[in-house]
Length: 233
Image 1 (cartoon, rainbow, N blue to C red):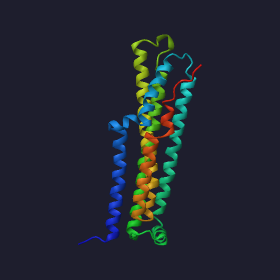
Image 2: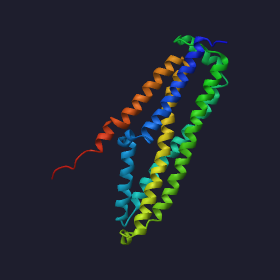
Image 3: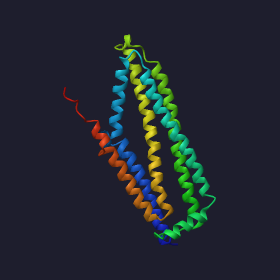
Image 4: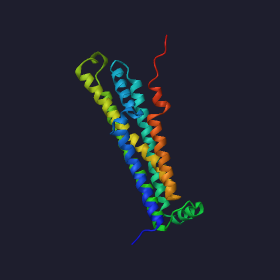
């Protein structure tokens, strides 16, 4: 039994999509190449933040910054739930998806079953994003507790204070890592939308999303900003 060309194209496009997501994860989070990424550089800035926080008597600014990070995470968690609902709503109208694909006529085949599977796959991506954002929100909550447990400025040089600041920094880094993974799921979800048009559109959108994210991490102006030298007085 042989698969039709359209089915083979869909399988190839889906494999490319999964490989791109996993490859990007490995590139940014486990490889030495990722050590130069914006995310890794910001991890070091979090350590510097906690070191400076030790010498502040009034830590209202630090608490406000942490609350701001947590609120941003809550926004994305809520948005991902809305996206899940929208994706599941697509399951009720697979005929519309089939009509869209036929109107665009970008190649590939579309059946009712494949349209439903594509909609289900999109929902799964957003569910994954929700779990990442929800866990990130919770970890930021833990970080707030650890921030409050850091000893006061008069004990800044003690081993206990240094260890407490290191724990708070590590917890904030974990929260940021899960937030980044949730946001990455959003970006790849946008690329996944190309599959509703055709497998070839999915290949193109996956490559585009991978390039944009890679450039922002390793070739962006935000990364260059971390290398700005102090102004001369």
